[in-house]
Image 1 (spheres, helix red, strand yellow):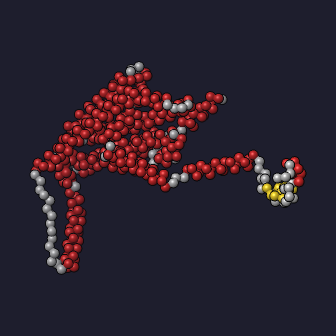
Image 2 (tube, helix red, strand yellow; image 1 turned 60 degrees about the vertical axis):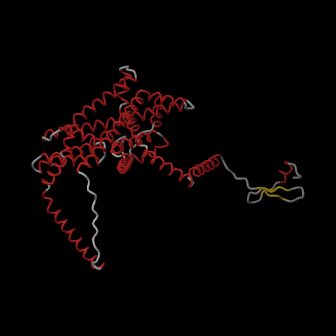
Image 3 (cartoon, one colour; image 1 turned 120 degrees about the horizontal axis):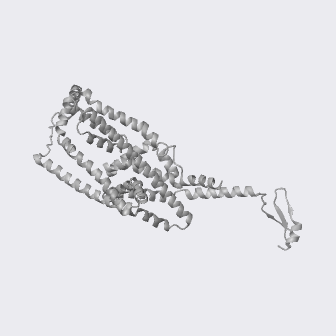
Length: 439
């Protein structure tokens, strides 16, 4: 450039396209790019679009990230399956701890008992009641298990009306097998012989010994897991708040500390409320079934009431199993099939009333769960942890939904798990309160 800035500005010319042209020292013009006429709104909109594009670009997962995520999920499932003897008592202790958090708070804050003593009183009281009920129903349950062969014989006698259709189906099946064997013999020349494989015979006492050994091993494992769960539950009740306090202390800012405490309090409160409500409903279902068994004259009504209480924790499959058990026992107890239909019918009515009226009325506004995910959770945890997994499937799914509802990042997942109704997040609950305080 040979011209000074002021002189160049005097000689600058603009063509029709908005391009600024300036002469150089040799008299030639050189072009500058057009200057866009942008106001503040346009610049802000362009900046927002650029930020949105950057967020979308960062949110895209590359194949390596997806593969790592899949491997992580598989590793977690693998660990849950093979470490069930360690993880299952811990999960049970966490669930029971959330269930007993409200009584623990009453003993510690209102009655001014030390936390260690409060935890000890709660554990002894709860497991004392459970042990007393278990002792009361253990003898009748053992008697019914011992009478299982006679029960099956009586069941065949009561269901003799179904023998003729079953025999007809069996005869048709035999004719089809004979026809297929004749056709295959003609195609193969009829020279082939039939090979019969005989299973090795076992001694009469071998099966009983194997069953006794398996029961002994199962009892030993159950007692060990129960002791581990009680020990873990004691420390959670006595020292759970100190663990939360240590976690809050490592937060960087006061706002983060306050938010962590609020989220933990809301999650504990809602989970405890859900588990307590479900347990009370199941107790009422068990009492209603025990009462109807006593009215109809079924033996050991306490046993069938406790069975209905436990099976009601397992959605859909549990009550259906209870109805079938009631029907089989009624066939063995009552002389006619019409009388045997009364207890399972009343059980079905109680289940429909509880499942379609009471539970939705109490929990539908805040704790709705997707039925598809409920069945999926039931099948998955039953496959992973057996009967204990089936009992814990719905409580764990509900706990997961409540946690998602109170963590803003996981709110969409909680919406999918729970359907259209969702609980307010902590932030949405705090903001209106702050607005009221400012007003």
